Amino acid sequence: MRRRQAHGGTSFEFGAGANANGDGSAFLPDIQSYDYNAPIAEGGEHGYGSDGKDKYEAIQSLLVKDEDPLKTVEPPLPPRTKYSALEFHEYSLFTADSSISALSVGTTTLKELMPREAVGQYYGFILYSLEIDNHASGSSFTLQFVQPPHDRAQIYADNVGWLGAVERQGHDSGTMQNITISTKAPVQEIMILVENMGRIGYGHGMDIDFKGLQAGSVLLDGTVQEQMILNGCFLLSMDHKYMLWVWSSPGCG
Image (cartoon, rainbow, N blue to C red; front, top):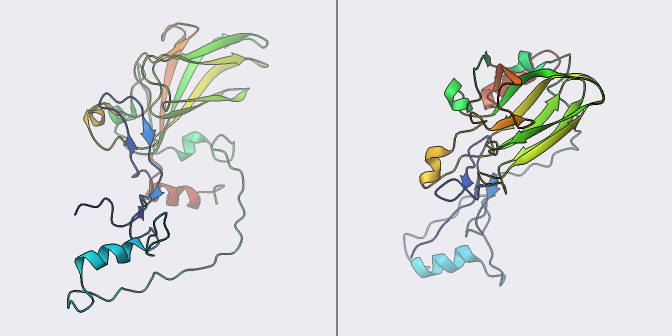
């Protein structure tokens, strides 16, 4: 008998992974907590089918008889704790008290856009800083993503703030995504914060699943690079060690 999977679980940080076709299309991130309706649930309890029957006991009855010495006593469930109410506070990396450069584990100057693996970062976020020709107040321009970001990009502009988001899911290679920027103040810098939503876990898509932005993937009013100067990229690894450092930094607690 083959059963996938036997026990539910949780993938922490950026380990959940993603599904996709062999060419990397149809990208679909996995959630971090799932059990595939397994006979042993994520919390250690027995899993129950849609008919209300205990799947763990049903499988056990097929494999082991009551008098069988191999039938083991189940361990106790992990202890449960009731937590008090949690209060959430809005927090942005783009503040004077804790700037993006202060939170970055490194800054790299690039001659062209490239994925973050090319600069030695394998988890977390990466922020690209693009200097553009000054666009006066009241003007508009379009930022075009010829290739989708890997995997989700938040776009910001100086003196304007958040402009919007583009993502890989639902937008395969060759699908143009545009962000039109109508300025209420002069704009000289665009920042693109790219999030890793999980690496492809099987097939040939694993070979091309680089995270961040590819060379030539972003146009400004249809132009590559001539109107943009890539100041560099800020590396935000977002692993456990990094987050402990962030929360211990002044202004971040």
